Image (cartoon, rainbow, N blue to C red; front, side):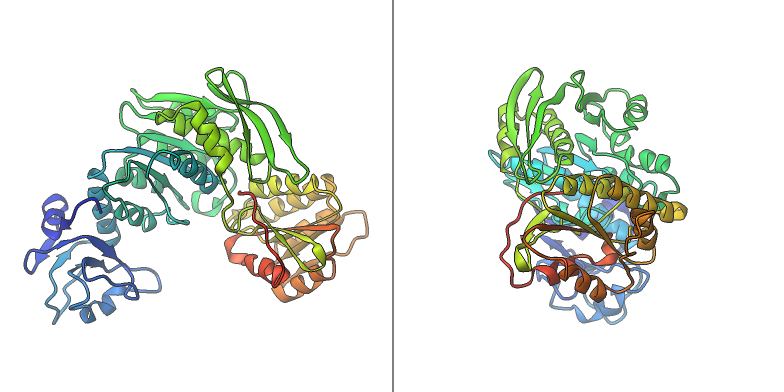
Length: 463
């Protein structure tokens, strides 16, 4: 925290009931396995847990409690509130109000973590950014990022995720960004939203949540660009980025090396700088454009944006390249998957030399059209000339069937991870590249781990 807070401040600002003497705190914790004597403990509840069951044992281990009911036989000062998750956000909001630097927020169906890491590299050259750690991008994680603000931070970079309507608007109310961007909209978490149009509306709250004087960075290449432009609030600046030369920030002369790393001219208000990404895949050019737009809107010079993009390294589980047994290449893109990001992965894999294999775990949360979306992925893999498609999970059978349609190929659909790993291991040699991808529920990182165990590793790229 930039400076300590108190339970009295929270009760005076947001209501609730204060029990016990005055207490200030410098940290917040929500896990009884990671306590801090200078912290308050927020007792969160979920479908399968209730931290209130453990707070009576925390005397002497924390300074106070945030709870939603009376805790008998507990002498710790308490702020009693109707909803402890909301209270967590309110503490985060007070931390945000202590901060006077620039605040950038990014959301999107795919690639938002990549954009965040690009921004961290750009600002890290001359600034001290506070950046969302890992995937702490929801109503629980975003406040934790705000708790990490320190007096020497001068830039705050927030990743915002959502699995249903109104979540982005809620996060914007806490984080109060001055520059916002939707990286893209794809069929991800459709079950929680109902339709792709609803996803676009929900992600667009990152723009409507801006206050007057803020800047909306619009990905002009996204199908919903006009939708967002038409709904920007009064007093909001707009900055379009994209491949087209009518955008204030665009690209020229995109080239890919043999491994799929892009080099391109980044054009910012007619100033051109050559960028060479260490990341894999042409889709990262689009990510770089959004990052460049956010940085430029926050006052970073064009040359500094280009040099920062050159520095970006990979993120675990997102287009990281490894060596496997027999000299085979394994590209770990296992962190998550939706139809758009799988299509980008297929494009990257198709450019590789030698035998090309996609190992795909089921894509989750796609709603009623899930089987059809998997079938389309199988067709795309066939059209792009992949040599084999190995799938894990019941939905993967549709992808495998479409991939082999009319060619009498084996189905290569597996219901358990061990059988998939064994089948892939038989394919490995120094002329083979395997790209591994799937939704979190598929745990495809375990496939990567099994294939690359005891093999030398090189990391590249990002999703």
